[in-house]
Picture 1 (cartoon, rainbow, N blue to C red):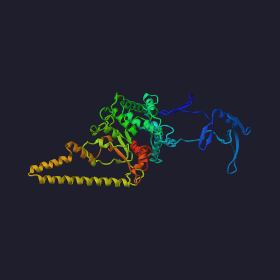
Picture 2: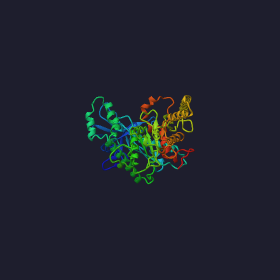
Picture 3: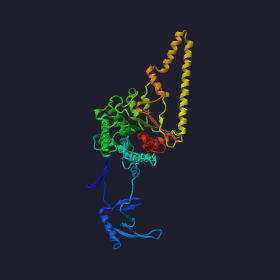
Picture 4: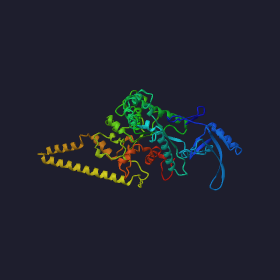
Length: 513
C-alpha cells in the first residue's frame, strides 16, 4: 500500500481495490476498542485545552459542543483526569477522548515479522460471483478478504512447523487476481443493456442471475473469454515483475497459481494457451498468442473446480492421454475436491483411455487431515470406506468373470467342433475387452497398477485429491458451504504449504531450510 500525503489517499499496489482517504489526527473518540479520529479543528481545540490544564477546564467546539476536563476515580480511590466531548441534546452521550493512537498490531503482522524473506508467490484467481461478494453490504467474504486470511493462516502454519532453534521459514505471498470488473463494468454497453432489461421485482434473486450466473455465460463468449484471459495473464505478469523488482530474495522461480471455481478454468486455459494448445484443451478465441505467462509456475491448484466438466464439453478426452503441459515440464497439478461440492469434477478419468472402465477407477487420493489419528493423515472412517469400495469392486469383477466363464462354457457345449469352440472363446474375450487394442490394454494395465499421470508432476503423480468426508454430517447439509470453504479449511492450508514449500514441511518437529 502507498499513502500520498499530497492527496491524502491510501492506494493498493498489489490488487484492485478503491483508494481510501487518510487524515491527520492526534485526538480520537473511543467506543470500546474502536477509535475515530477528530477533525483537525477539534484536535486543535482539544490539544490547547490539554496543554493549558488545569488553568482551563473546558473549551467550546463548533455545533454547540464542548470539550471538558473530568476527574475520575477508579475502584482503588486513584484519581485522574480525562477529557470528554459533551454534545447538545438530552439523549446524547458524552464522547470519551483519547490522546494519540495506542500501540497496535494488525492481524498477521507479528507472524510476518518472524518469517524470512519472500521466496514463493501464490496468485489466487476468483470464480463466479465476485461482483456480488465484493459488495460491502454482502455477508460473503470477498477474494481480498479470503486471500488476506489465507496468507495469515499459511504463515501461522509455517511458524508452527518450525522449532525455535531453526532458521525462520521463508515468506509466502498470496495475491488475489480480480477479473470480475472486465465483465461487470457499469460503463460498458452490455451491462447497461442488461440492467435495462432486468425487471425490478425480486431484486435479490435477479442480482444472483446478473452478478453470479452471468459470469459462466459470458465466459462462453469468445470476446469476453479473451478479455478475461488477457486481463488475468497481464495482471499476473505485472505483479510478478513488480515482486522481482522490490524483493531481492525473490528470483521469480517459485510461483504457484490457485484457481477457485471458474477461476480454475481460467487458470487452466491460460496455461494451455501459454503452452501453445489451440485444440480441444483450450477455448476458441481470437489472438490466442496474446495469452503468454512470463514465468513458469511450479504448482497449479484447482479448488472446487469444473475443469473436468469444461474439458468434457470441449470433447477434449481423446486429446488428454498422457497429457502434460510441454512448456511447463515441472508443473504439478492438484485438483482439490470436496465430495459435497456440486461444482467439483474429477480430471483423472480424462487422462485415461476412453475405453477405461469406471469400475477400475480408484477414488481420488486423500488430502491428509490434521485431525486424523493415523500417521498417514487418513481418518478411520475413510479407511473403512475405501476398503469397502475395494471389496465391492472385487466382488463385482469376480461375478463378471464367472459370467464370462459361464458364457464360454455354454458356447463350448453348443459348439460342434474344436474350431467352433475356439471361435466362441475368441468372441467372448473380444466382447469382454470392448474391442481394445493391445496398446490400450497395456496403458490400462499400467494405469490400474501404478495410477500415475505426467500432469501430476514428479513424485506427485496423482491429480485428483479429495478432502476426507465427515463421519456424521450428511453431504447435502455440507453442500451449502462446501464450494466456498476451501481457503478456510485447515487441511487445504496444510496441503498448500506441504506442496508449495516441501523443504519447510514439518519433519521431526523442526523446520528444514
